[in-house]
Length: 468
Image (cartoon, rainbow, N blue to C red; front, side, top):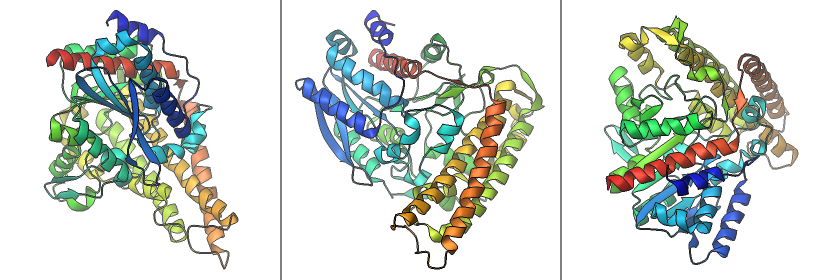
């Protein structure tokens, strides 16, 4: 790592909490006011709720780079990296010149969704507080999975306003490098990338090892992911998901299953050959996610147990949703998300795949078994939390006299919502208590997460300059 870069990495502040949407926007306005010759702020569009989407442009060189935080609204690690990076670029001329990039930054792309995560942003950082106050939209409402695409029997053109705004920015600036600032919730560090070589991949892994964050050596995020190297995967697009389901479940109704679009990486690569990097980082980790020793279960059985438990859990949630659905706004974001996350569209394909893939007939590693059991349950706990919030929010609107669904003339609506709320709270509490007792988790300091993301971005920026 170049000395000028290392000095920047050594000065990352020890942030204790994540910033809200309003705090991020105010900081950007202040930076543009302080450095008007270097920094420009302009709008690229508006969110679904009418919020302005500001972009910071920082002049610096002949290469063009784009970074955006909160492609999913429960993923604010990137917002803090951008908070530090944007100011550092303005203050540090040597750093800016060495990079030789003109940068465009959107700190919080899904700003509406980030507002719905604000109750956990300031902590405490526990499994309970995170899962209880979490929000992530359904796939067909996610800003980074609603880019237009026509592929085989899939045709998606219901583009969100946020995706449309980003499309316009990408078309205008045609970036060489896109850093899509995602992050995971639980596990270890891993990356998605458009290409590269083993030397680059090893350097990416070292960014996590250097600050003591484990690699995620469990199951891939999706079974169709293509591993390029341990913890490094080929950039994912909707095309891979489509081909995977089509291959292993040929009787599937693809038009109904593939109900969301492609992502910014796929769109930008098709449009102008952009190279995209994602660095997926955890808030919480358990050392077992990095353990490649042999577990006492076949990998196939470990995955099947995960799918069976998930299907049973999803069935309980769908039953609750069916009971409250008549009383809620059909566009309620929490209910739409739960419906999407309990569909299990790829389960049949996954069962067919593991039955024939020899790599699933071996013993699972400790990391894979841990991922399939406890990490999978952690992610299901998020849907339990959103079920609570859906009921809770509508009851609060009723009390305020501005309910979203039909009025409660007979008292039936309140009875159903109270019942569903109590059941969801019970499900959430029981699973959270189980997770707290069975996971020996640690909370990763924010500065370490920023260090991994920023170092990863600098490595790829240099790699692309050298390749060019």
